[in-house]
Amino acid sequence: MARHDDAWGGVLAAALAGAVAMYLLDPDKGRRRRAIARDRTLRALRQVDRVLDAASSDARQRARGLAARTRRLAAPAPAPDDLQLIERVRARLGRVCSHPHAIHVGALDGRVTVSGPILAAEAAPLLAAIRAVPGVGAVDEHLVVHHDPGSVPALQGGRPAVGAHRTARWTPALRVAAVFGGTLLAVVGTRGGPLAWLAAAGGALCAVRGATDRPLASLLPPPAAPGRGDEPPQHTG
Image (tube, rainbow, N blue to C red; front, top):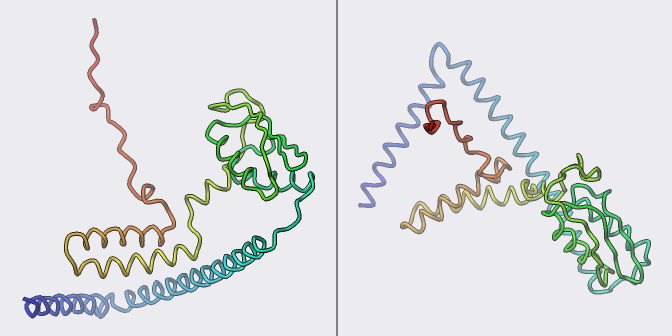
């Protein structure tokens, strides 16, 4: 059985090689096709080189950050004064809040007070981020929560929080790991049983996510708008 499968694999490989040769060596269009293939290959190689450089730089920076964080945990820094604590808290607001300038921050002996209007979806992440700031001992919350901006002047406009971009976009190091790891899992998984094939499908999706740097849901075509004939019949009384 294995010998039979190998024979079929050889036949398919030979057929594929023949089709590629016919496409590239065509007397009329072969030269143009080879030039296009060469340009696309060089462009892809340059893009891969840029991604690998970015992934290497990202991994080095994250390693330095982890080492610095470890050193801080091993030798804790002195408690910040109130002004330093306020600046640290304000630096975190833009990561979890789309209207950071609407939030008022105060501090006294490690106790932070926050007030102002905020969207309901951002209130809990904001408080969690503040509690995670080094030096914060307690949080007094006086936020005015709104489910939508409505007519609140401080909640008009704004920009997406930094954390929203991070959930959608992966770091270069994570993208490279997803592409290589997902591809390897997809190749190895096709040699096993049903569970292995399921793992292969997951690896392929992971590789696609890393290669495109887009959520998988955004790669699907949008649902077709209902046509006039799809509207439910209206009954008149």
